[in-house]
Amino acid sequence: MADETHLAALRQGVAAWGAWRAAHAEARPELVNASLRGLDLAGADLAEADLRMTDLRGTILSGATLNRANCAQANFFKAVLDGADLSGANLIGVRFLNCAQLMSARNWQLAFRDPDLACGARVPSIASPAELAP
Image (spheres, rainbow, N blue to C red):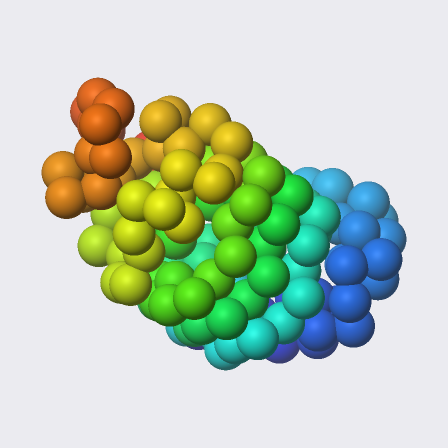
């Protein structure tokens, strides 16, 4: 379940979220099963966030940082990922993500993903399930 403090900060907008992240640099954002549907999170720092099962339908994530974010089983229907950094992100079991969306992001080849999202690139092996644990 999402941490209500983290969710409230994010829903205030990208600038407020950035200030919250700066003030809580040690915190790993807990946004499990949150509804972020349709939010404009362009440029948001979501590095290492726990976004498992999160509703990202129609969410604008252009230029967002999703490095090492755990997005397992999240819903990406019509999410905009243009220029988002997916280095080391866990995309295992995501729903409604296609190659066109994925390939519009940066470092998508370095994201852990299912074979049906190979999109012409090698799928990285997950060294340890512990790496993807919340």
